[in-house]
Length: 493
Image 1 (cartoon, rainbow, N blue to C red):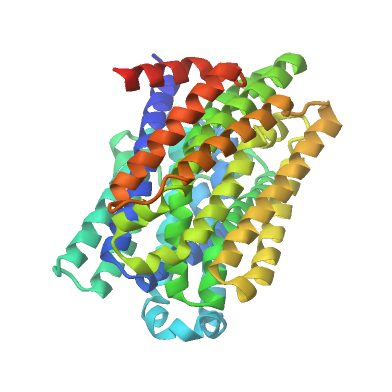
Image 2: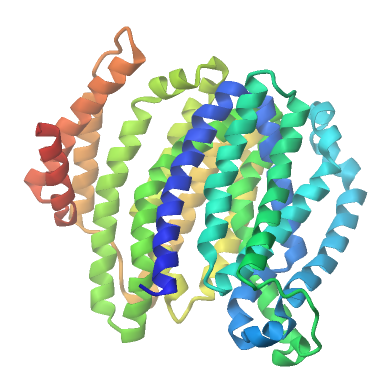
């Protein structure tokens, strides 16, 4: 097995373990040990630092992956590529830091009701942003070297385990909250240190500058590509982070904490769609290379049906059992985010059942339109949050996410249809939705009993016993037949 295959297998395992750890951490461990305002503070600090670091990087993480093959030559230290990759973003970091320092009154004014909680950590945010930037560049360099599994392990598994450990230490009274926040931010520095040590271990820590770096590729070409990547990266960060920042600004850090937990409860629904996308990306690229649009269209419809079947089941399973989920957290104040969970689940379900439209666009000859869609989604997300949060609170933030996801997926689906005459829907999708509605209604009619756990088990049993046989009997999704038959056989055993 080659290095790319080994790294791909390791990354797949790490990503799923990390996704599970992240869900357990954020949905259960942290809210049991920290208050909503404390979780809100950490979310706001990380969101600000991420945007700060991406602006400073000017897309050079993507530049590193895109252009490293032109520099690759281990004997001469890759022509000074690593100093070039680090150097220009560090200049950008200096400028971003000046803006961050000068903008302190403006930023703190946005969080005036929580200034006492945020103010002590404002300048610590510079260090957090620095190590976020440094690690993103180290990660890009290691990915270009085909050594991506180490950074995936550090970020997706080790950091989450250590975050949980720090929270447990705080919950046990071994450290105070200030020390927890410093430890939380210090983990980003640890990530960078471990990445540097790993680069040294594999003999790829080439820090000596070389004049040859300026001759391999024109600087203008690197900057143009970096600007393109910057727009895409910042748009993605805005889409994933702006709701929490705006909730904190318009309401409070406490509301941000409640919304953060609701947001991460809903991420469980992304698991089947991420699995499908990992398979879909290389297949779609191959279909484009072979100009095999009929097979691509069939794959588009097939993955949409399978995603709809799995997504509806998971969405109903989570939505019907929110009482149990919040009972596990053990702090009633977080249950104020239940409506937000339902809206976020619907948004993620729509995002999933519209199929792989985004991947078709990004792998197609018209891939530049993907940037247009991402920027449009970022603008729409900011606008809808600004409109709805003051009116509906955290429910408004969740509704803004739902509306934005729906609008952009309608646009992407229409674009793929107009450009390539492919669309993922047929009558079977409506039948799946009807079956899911019927099964969900029957499960919802199960009355709550004395125990949230028993209620959850009863509703899950009814949902499964009705939904799975109906999907099999109608043949609405042939792609789901084999996994469903295995699942039902295990239940019978």
